[in-house]
Length: 440
Image (cartoon, helix red, strand yellow):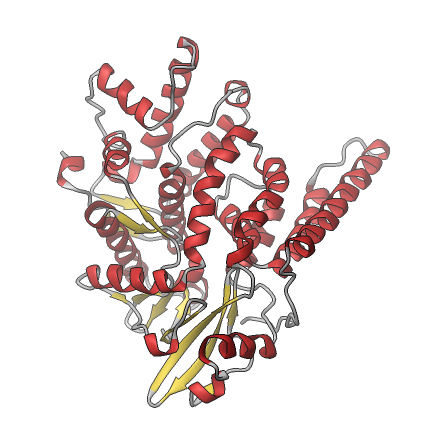
């Protein structure tokens, strides 16, 4: 870890303890608003930057102590750069790398529960302090014989508190995301399902092996092996992948050729999963990738995998085609199937939402419309953010009586925006391969 964070001796586990934490945070946030508006009466020109800063500090501090799904939601929101004011983005991004780690006695307790032994009895060496701590678990380094291992330990109580935490995080999400309640509830169900899957470490090992095996032919990718004898429902042991996170690697000033090589490996990895496997590693934040010697990309976390239903896949990607030569009737059917429009809409609403989503998907599809795309082009990302701003502030969107878009779109959009974001950070130019039916 870049800096030594103070270890946490306990985590609030019961619903009452966790709710109390949210209530006290809500009170602090309320107090911040009162102070902000009091200052604004004296200085009408005051902007909300200071308010956002105070709220971000208070919310992140609470969520990082609670761990689990509450912190994971913060992490997801920080990835979607046009959802939150910058103060929240900057603070919540820390959830990807550096939540306060659990103290060693709590780690030993988890091992005793699942193996009836402490980590030092199972491994030759085991770091007492976590080398990385995030939203759902923390990682320790261990050795066994000649193997260097990464041991991921889930925080106590995380799996049991997913549903209740999401109910508690709802008021913050409504206020921060500028969504209506129907829209938020529509997506929360999908988020809850994925978060519950992320706490199932045995499912994660199964998917890791499945996807890494199916992607093993792709150039410049590396995957760890997993060790069942040192893994359980709440502990995963895998090979230690040596190297740097993308941000650290970029600080070494790699050549453009090296950046393109890593970018191409990323694109090829996602292309194969989405179009051939119909399931995808849906958590493309920088903490899940390690750049190794020889500019090889290590993939270290398969906790969040989205299985893509076939009808959603065909509807969604048919809209990405460069020349949308689809008859109006067929196009309408796709918009209905993807839940962008419904029979409850007036003709005016149908026309408006069809136009908006066509524009959105066509923008998302830009890299697919050429054989090679330069992701260093900040202008492309400006267009995405501008469109996001315009839509979220549009009256038609705000007064919409229903949620827009299939729940399956939540993680697919997140996957592509996350992938594009990583490729933009890399400043990579890549060959944007696509399936034959989409290239035609």
